Image (cartoon, rainbow, N blue to C red):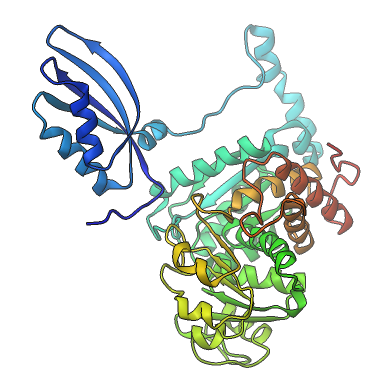
Length: 473
């Protein structure tokens, strides 16, 4: 039976190998099960046996069991322990807090804590804006989730969401030097979420909403944006939208088309689909058709979902009806933020010349790249093991870095458009091709470019509170 390929697991197998068994038997057992040996380390040696740690790459949990079973069946080989390196990375959590100033004596203590700290507290009491200067607020973001829409896992609860939010905090720090802390809330009530975030907001310079299910996420973000004077950004919506627009800006250069002339199909009208549509409209795309499980979102039709009702009045100018095939016929661009297997080769054959397909469902896209390749000009996915990965890491670190630098009150549409253009510009025209329309997440120029563009857009649109603090780098 074929093994379903995923991003893979890396295991450390602790093996007790008797002196009667050669290591070649270990290698054979792992190889016959399809495992890939990465490293071998000697842990302990005795006259009659040796204990080794063997690092092996496998595809998924079922493949792991096959490798372990293959080893266990060999005489003289005992599997003592199996460790998943991903789980090992998570032991005790992935982030920690470190002091910037050491406390080595009483004088140090009196400055960072009582009695010296009282003078700083009084200064902030007299002028609350000084919290941006004298506390962690100036460079700290709350990563807030209720665990209802985690990755491809759905509603798994706040505790299970915590590893994802920790990872997000790591990326903020690694890529942009922004301190972030995970806040996982044990409530699904929008009123309670808004109240809690407002209550903790004094300690933070920005709020990153994450993995909150639709349509609740729209109301929560809207209310927090209205009621707080710091940036509130739902990354599942706007981060995805910004990076998709960045990729599309470069893709149309290759196929020699204009945004204003495109016919775009957006499949999956949830948080990301709506945000993608809004930013594409702002960027100049005029013909967008939304498709969900129920079919095309029909022009001027009334829907119970207020977001779909908005969608019906701002998209589908041709008044198309039906399903995906009716929507995609003659389309230049397909953007999928839905689920695996939605898109078929017959859909691609019905598209216009030089079709552009962004199949973003993760981990399994709307169509596998191998199936799509004969029929598309440009293909992008959310996966790291294919070219043109559309990854939010290209977006949110730089956006918050720029917003925090100028103490922006919000992240507005102009700032998002500026971020998308900055990301796209990190792929110079002489490097641009069908397999390279979006920069790598490890391209150090991206955060700097996005931060600068966002800060300038914030100052230009009047939401910056430090107008002369646009970084020059």
